[in-house]
Image 1 (cartoon, rainbow, N blue to C red):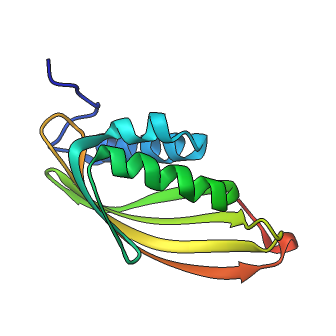
Image 2: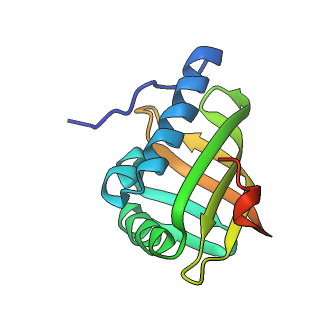
Length: 137
């Protein structure tokens, strides 16, 4: 039986917002085992300058990401959608092992399969060093 991740495409405003919130909630768990289940087995990613292929690579990428990006907190915002695709703006805050805080800004393009699993994710991200007192997430 094929796994399904609701809501399914084609999306309307309500279901697109639900999908974005579900992604935000999942990523904020910082649990690679849980998060990777939202992606197809053969998912394709571009994250900054990295190219990631397949759910297992996603899991390993997320594991190393959250080992580096400590006290990670993410906020996502829907910017647009059509049928099985979405554009999302996001920002997140984190600090490194030395205690330097960052706010990372970016945009993602998502494509889902008919079962609601993300098969493509293309992310452009920039980091800004901030003082801990400047955090708002």
